[in-house]
Image 1 (cartoon, one colour):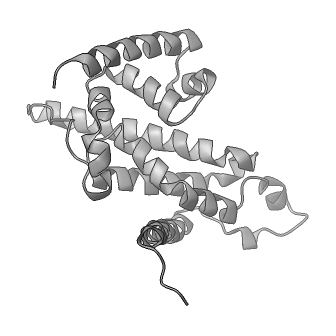
Image 2 (cartoon, rainbow, N blue to C red; image 1 turned 90 degrees about the vertical axis):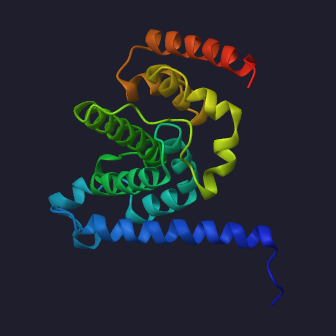
Length: 215
């Protein structure tokens, strides 16, 4: 069998990483209180009527296929690799546990993205609260991704994004990096569509100034 190109090996390594994380997260999810395997649902029962949502296989495949992009989404809101990985894995567990609520399987990725955003925001709130209680200065949000995130960290756009106000950054991340519509962004962030447009416009204006400023 011919040797794989280096690029192919790198892709296989990333796929293997996502598969390993998905397997671990799936096992963890099934160990959560109240977790139920699809095999336990018998046809014709009330449980079967409730088990209409996305399947474990579909959720797992979606998670594996978009693992890197979910990490990238978390990285735009958080400031260290370990936290990003924890958030993405926790998002899988949360959606896995509530998968019967995902009535349309094609929306599985949207549920994962929304959960990643919500968990990232919660992590930031806890971190900021802890820093205030300890009377410590805020950490430098401009450096933290390692290894796979080195290229992302060097990107001038990403650095400029971190200088935006929180709401502006969240709107731009979801609108242009997660490819959400204005209505979807409004739903995720609990804002009106008008507010989403306003934060987006101000964020883009601030980005333009930051990108034009000398390094």
